[in-house]
Image (cartoon, rainbow, N blue to C red; front, side):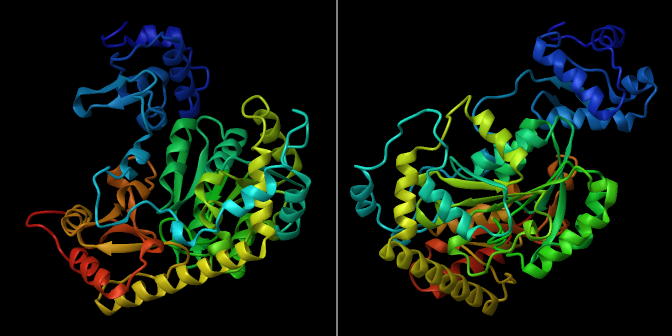
Length: 475
């Protein structure tokens, strides 16, 4: 059938469609595409025609089409129809491509969301101290070395039946989602949120359900509404939320836990995944739903922002059965995180000089956030107070702001990749902390404040000018 319009009767015979729900229809079509029965370029029936054939509403088929599109298996070409994409294009996922910065040099790159290398603890002394002692004597040894396990256990927020380490926060999030999310499931995400999370859900064929934020994180009312959709998981960034810099308070964590408990059957299978990526450089204390809901929470603590991205270490703690499933699956791949790297992290977490360096970095990031935020607000740019290394700045036009700043030798990250849409389309995405997008509400850009080493005033002048500028006829 390659390159031709797929006949409905033939499609019904191939797929069967025993489960005429959005999840069932999408699953049957996905199996046909993966098996090569439907090939790249094949034109699918319209949602109205297939809905009539299956005796379901067009909206039911439309939801299935949207799930397949998020997974990269089909693509809509407007009035021309929907077409099979096969396994989709290679290269980075869509939002990751949107975040990628060009290689051309700029005077000041504030787009990457990475820590200031000058504020990281030195690795040289740690390397010299552990090189003679770190060794793996058995492939079946515990994946976490005892010294690191003890440190993690003593500092862990809330109760965790088991703690293991993996290769960074995204590795932890990906492996946990793979254990709890199936094709067609719904997952509640922060809006705006971290683009790779949204790309991961697309790969899994899951539907992102966006919930609004304020300066203390997810709004309880928005979460209550999202739970009526019976999601499989909730993805949270409890501190220094990327991109907004919002940090959840213990009081907000308690509110969210009450919302989840009161949801009853709607939240019966909900797993909460917390990504505490900036914990040790955050100005705020620990906040986790694990205090109230220990049997539901998988907490992820990363050391990339505080001790260096190349360490590639994150700790995962939560219910034993779920963490053990992650460990068992990982043994069929990388097996464990380098015990040499684990030994280096232990040294950095216990060495007085390294501890003082991380504390100094935490104070420096807080001072940079405060200085730039105050300077922008003084110039009528309504940025919210933020924690960590990123700031979410409202602008009249994202595109105009990016162009004007680039002309001044400054690069920031465009806000679009951070937006989650209920139906996977940019046209329905809300903007900012839960504000519907329209011509009367701003676009946004993310500024990595952590890299602002010099005075805030000259940068604030450039940012404010660009934020309040819109090219003629631009949006």
